[in-house]
Image 1 (spheres, rainbow, N blue to C red):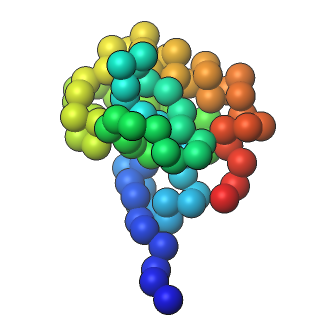
Image 2: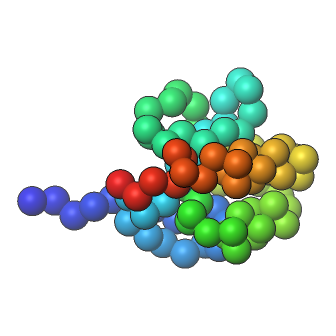
Image 3: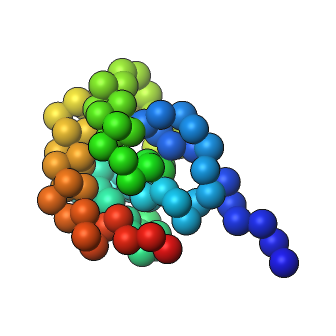
Length: 93
């Protein structure tokens, strides 16, 4: 029996089990959610909480797990996608 992987939320910086977080991917189309956790590209994790999403939008500078510095507009677009598809993207695993 192995322990669940621990990941760090890019919004608040708290560590949590991977299954409790939403994976986001930085790909050729920009940032997008990855509910199946299978898309190619650099990934990061967010809590399924509007407070963490707001922290992610406010954050300035690079996101280490994504190895890039997404512009604020890109972050806002991702959060709008998360809000609009909360039933399908934020299902607990």
